[in-house]
Image 1 (tube, rainbow, N blue to C red):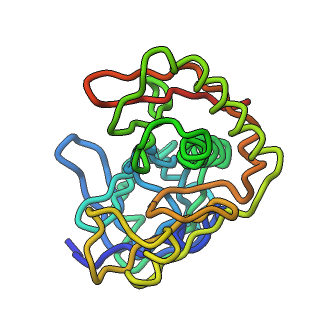
Image 2 (cartoon, one colour):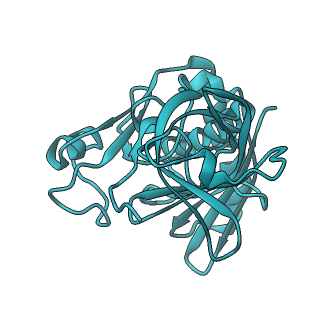
Length: 258
């Protein structure tokens, strides 16, 4: 298997839904699913609390060929596109996709849009946590899998503050959404990234590395590998359903306007 890292095109353009790539490898995984490794991809793999993109892959010179991408994973900087052939009629995937074959990638727009909005909402709540003085938390970790989106923080707040802070947090978030602001992402040397993030980076970012920094409006940036909206206003609206604090951890549960 080719061990060259996959180029992540969505790092440079989070709103790109169609692209071209070259096949590096086609194989069957341990779970029986077929997988493609490409030289580059616009498909976001599952990770960082964000589910993977889905979509399909086509061949320019064969209008009948369609590889449905059901799941995308990343391991050791290599992205694996798992799926199956639609209406294969007995053809072998390996015969259709020789190494070096040019293919076209198509990301499901509705799913990308939904998860970009959910992921951006989690980052916006980080900003609002500081605005309303909700505890003394470091930036949280956002998750939005089927069990519901939430941001998790290390630290606790008083039980009698939970309801009032929930309402204040939701109000502040929706005020920022109404105001809007550009969302951008850039890969930077460590020192420049730290400046963009208010002077320091989390301990898990190795010194000397080149982290990808996402900036939400005029506020300090934060390291993130996910996809985001083009403008804060694209989130549309946030509902903070619950704030739960237990054993030194606080979770802020939220949803977005459909």
